[in-house]
Length: 47
Image 1: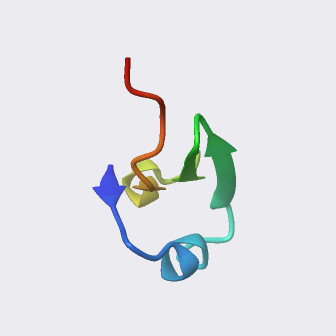
Image 2: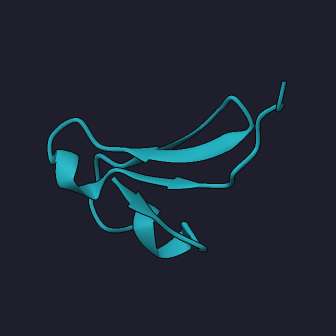
């Protein structure tokens, strides 16, 4: 999975790529081509 500073270019790499927000982070997921996975943001709570 790539860690990127900007996901604008990541979400247009493939027509199946979707941008989702989980646990304070932004993910790009692609079921047909998993090498396009990416994440942005450190987010989350520290204990």
